[in-house]
Image (tube, rainbow, N blue to C red; front, side):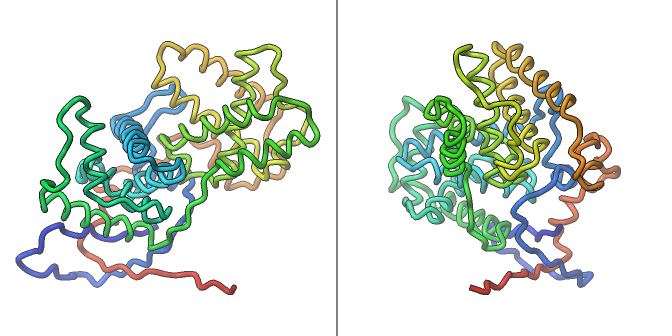
Length: 344
């Protein structure tokens, strides 16, 4: 797992000299394990207690900000979710304390609008961001946005593209929610429209967590459908949820442990954001845990995955003053990118 040194936003007075000749090869990693996220310093929350630390709270707030700005600009949800995914991926390599979240958020919205071909001018994004950040205040004049602010975003854009290794593929769970629910309706009678709508909203909220860099889109969709079914059954006794005797892991092409983990992380988010409903969400977490215990461990699971799922967060933390993230982003190495050549 490798990275590069941050690009200075102002030209240095003297060239940066490579002193030790180290060369890091960076390739795009679509997903990271919990151990890898902990190594990068991005996983520092207590999921079991539903408690988020300062960085996780900042991520949550920033993703809410991106959602509001995106809606104000009239972006489709895919563009907004892409911006949120870019935000999470950026801070896998660069610490929040060194890069202002609001500037990075604007950068992610700007880049996402290009990726999803819903392009907006940077000045328009700044106007929308200002109105969200300062509601009720006078609208920002787009012609009076300082050149310094524009340069900052361009500088962060270069860092973001470098973080992506110039790989702009982004899949979202929304299309899988629709496809999975239609598949379920083929052999089970239930209110598919209601289930899909609830799962869609859960998928939107999932982008306030690190799920998008931990699991593929179809697994997140499966977790959202699974959780939506449980929530709807708790809210309405007449709702027919997913039948317990069906092999949902095979239908969703995902391990049940992963589907349940997606559900648990979304519940942790709700427990933190909605203290008044924390008891209800905690009960659902307990119910999911009990179902997992009754089912037992997947007999086909490999040893490394078992170790990954059974380890505790403190087992992954590193001692010493310098973290992996600090080392990766030092000025003592150059970066070489590896690209996968398509055979089609």
